Image (cartoon, rainbow, N blue to C red; front, side):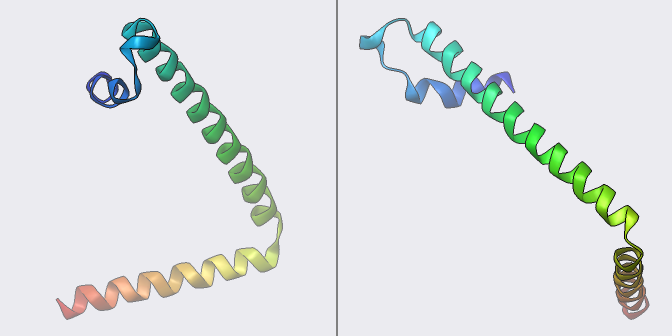
Amino acid sequence: VVLFFLAFLPQFTDPTKGSVVEQTIYLGGLFILATWLTFSALALLAGTLGEQLRESAKAQQWLNRTASVVFLGLAGKLIAS
């Protein structure tokens, strides 16, 4: 991860606008903040959606049927190989 940041972030720094180290740290902090916000939103969405799917009998039936089709497809591929 450190190598990624050291290779990626300096492209967006400008030595005429101050210390490159400070700009890199600032950009890294922005990246961390954006990542945290994105992953938090995804986690909340997944948790909410998971609760709704868990409570719905129709959704459970649909998920079970979809899983059985996937497993049958995998079994067919295994048999064919």
